[in-house]
Length: 447
Ligand code: PLP
Image 1 (cartoon, rainbow, N blue to C red):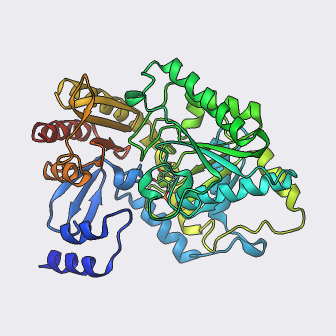
Image 2 (image 1 turned 90 degrees about the vertical axis):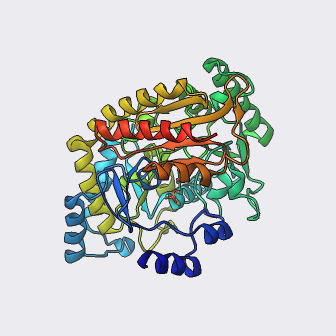
Image 3 (image 1 turned 90 degrees about the horizontal axis):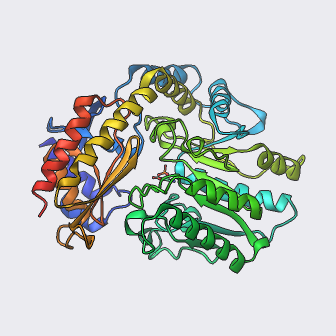
């Protein structure tokens, strides 16, 4: 009864993100009620393993009382403080210092946002400001990677290279350019890692030359492309792209909204790649999804250029909720949990997850298994040699999602017939094994 009335109210009033409005109306919402660890429970009492940590964000897992207490204590004491007028509060200051200490290289300056999209959007503004401050305002062209996702704000959606975020919205703009994805499994050039790296380097150089070397402002990458289907670049790809940007004097922006906070093992994937970006974004795992927050990291030279360029003038970028103290208090507590054992558990669980998913390769529908740590994908095909995608009637994401749900598993189902995995780092061995077993059960009934 309760479910029926909620479904009806939802249908009438709640507009869902990135969904077919009409399709959603027809299917109706599934209402979740509570969660603990890696398990979510719906309003009918059905329990499911959340193999996707909400939306790759609840890295610490659900139901940590200490996080709830940190938020409550901050709300009681000081629920809000602006950063305008030279004001501030303790939690965001401590959080910025803690993050700077853990960030790669000299990324010592942190600007807090409300999530990943506005973090990316903020980088576009800061990059533009940087080049104006350097006396090169004509550097206003941006390059990103096909299959990439960088949020869905007006500007960021154009760096995103997934057609669903462009069609009907009039993006991308003429100043937003793309190079091909590395996508090893379906790379038309083959899957030799060095060849893919060399091809991407050549393409980036050619793209910059075509635009004009003195016109390119920045190049954006995800250390692992998430929403494009969990596409892991060959080892050395990121470093090679970073080196090209350094050589050509282009800012390099690492979008770590998914890969940050233990998703691939270390706190930031950039460190694992041995690179220091000029700017970096994160969100999601920063607060483990308990409250909204994102961040832009700036290296010293970016911050100093902007600061010196502005002089006594205000840098006119900011939100009412920049550096929100409750979000910062939550992020500090989540960081303590990560470093108190969750990062270590995530590394162990990630190895088990990858091994478990690899064991699915014997299934006739499994074409590819890829990932790193607690970020993985299984790509389904009907013919392994020809890499034939699933037929259109099986492929829709909702079909695959439904089948996993029926097995008591939540996983991301990409429209191309790809299952995406990003479980909470707190998963036990038994939960990881259940994710793999339930996936096999879904595969057995998929065709
Ligand atoms: N950048 C990347 C790499 C992402 O994966 C996402 C979201 O999935 C975003 C940016 C946008 O973040 P948000 O959804 O918090 O706005």
